[in-house]
Length: 142
Image (cartoon, rainbow, N blue to C red; front, side):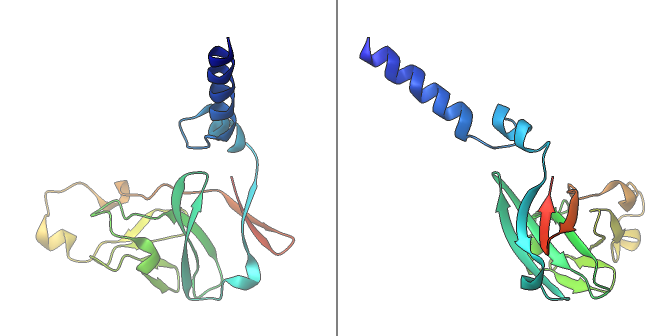
């Protein structure tokens, strides 16, 4: 009897504490805004890695002052975008130089037209974008 109760308790705790994107609690929490950073902590031209609810993300503030929150790995070769170069209108991957805007859309892929002209358009390449807003001097994500 105690073993069954312990097993049931473990299952309930797992349900409440697992927040990955494919879990019940993860799906519930993603319906609400979550604070991820304080605005003053991020200067223009900087990027910072975050782990929020089991997901690896990169938060950055480009040189024009726009915040972006994108997947931590470039969709091209999975390079870590937190090491990327922050530019006037987005974040450039440090591996092959692809430029992504704050929505995660690829704006530029240097040399792709020369290297593989038959390849699909770079416009189809996106990082997973994240909703974000600024309230009370904090960065929030949903």
